Image (cartoon, one colour):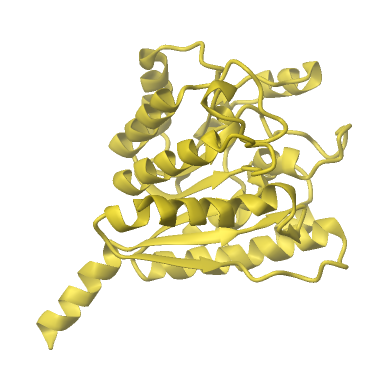
Length: 294
């Protein structure tokens, strides 16, 4: 009996738990909210999930009332996602979140615990808008800002386990599509950023090693528009000057080599923008790389 229990425990510790959050602006299956299930279908068809060499389970975050206000929907989904991630961690599984929007980070981070946590975030955009002066009004453009304690305090506090991540425990890689005010805000923060693809392997190692001095545990966030459009079009906001798939895959391996990665997310894929299907193929390869690192 003891040997059986030990085997079950070891199997659970090697499980990958894929958690789909198929929402954009809190609405299911629209725009980038179509991405998670499409990527899951591609991963199944390609055999990636069968090839990881460990148990894989798939589950989805339940929808919320579509008639609720946008912000209420977003934070309700974050609470539900946090429960899913927390359950995966408690079971010894590694959670990989496939999400439409980047503000899903709130639920993922709350679920894996913020104590001593750092963040490595790949994105063409800073997602660091402040609700006081945003011009787009996009909550998705506030994901990293909210994660570091900016704005929406009352609603952030409704997510159990969520606490602000210090800016100096965040590394932002491949950012490049910035308005002047967004660039100024990022430069005025303590976030360490590497712009576009104009950095060396040594530069990346330097910022990761610096982060390791502050945080041994990290949350890995991959917005697919961190990739250059030559690798495929992730969404309608894709911008030139991004990473190649080889660069991003190598960077992901560097993160796993240096840190205890406690959760990962792949976000912001809109199948409507991926007219030739190349980004779906690229994203599936990235999912395999994350699964291998985990």
